[in-house]
Each structure stands twice: as structure tokens, then as C-alpha cells.
Length: 139
Image (cartoon, rainbow, N blue to C red; front, side, top):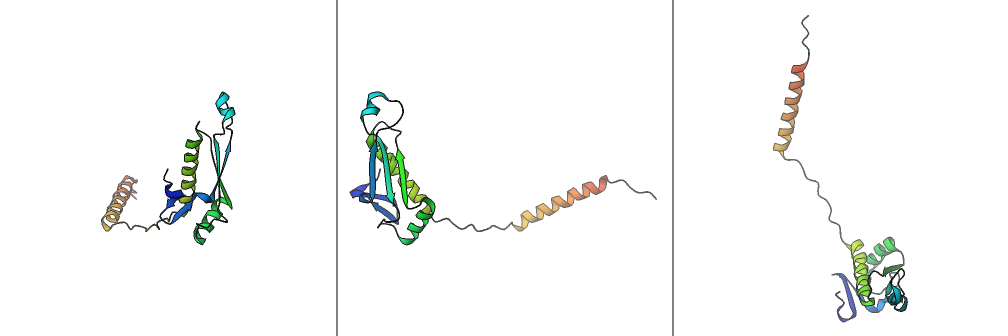
């Protein structure tokens, strides 16, 4: 995980100091014997979106709209607390980066003249075929 100098690089425009993150460690649930009963490997990572100094006003409003005032990430899959910490940081990074991505506006494409001509000629052929199938009226 890229956390150089106590910073979490989410995107080019967003870098969060690790001191803004709050970590809690709990015993993982489920089977696992003595190791899981004895060691606190489950990681709960919370990030206060509402009071973060590293977020700009637009970023804050987008994240508040999506997640609310506090974002909570839980990681307990691994046996190691360190790996669960890394997993939680990666999850947080992905969750923060997703709503902040700038979506490209779609520019509608126009059919080429040749494609339109082919479509019209096929329609004409089909209509001619059906016209020839009709019964002739000999009166």
C-alpha cells in the first residue's frame, strides 16, 4: 500500500494524512481457535468526511452525499492485523476515489452517409420482395 510519509494518496487531487484516520482493532468472529480468540486482527477504519481538513468543498459534498458524515471500513478476512490494515486502506482509497472521478461526457455519434444509404436500400429491397408476394387482382 502506498502510504509514504504518513500520507494516503487517493488521487492526484486528494492526499489524506494518516493522522485523520481512526483505527480500532477487535477480535475476529467465527472459527479459528486460540489465534482468533487471543488476537485482535479485525480492523475497523473510520474517516470523518465532515471534519476532514484534506478535502476540498466539492470533494466533501460528493463524499457526504454518497457516504454520509463518517465513512467506516471493516477488514477481517486475513489472519494478520497488518494485512487487514492494508486491506482496509485499499478499500478506503477505492471508496474515496470512485465518487471523485470526473465522468467523461458522451458525444453522440452520427451515422455516416454510406451506412444510411445501405439501410435504405435494404429497406427498399425488403419492401419490393413483399410487394411481389402479394396476390394480383385480375379484374
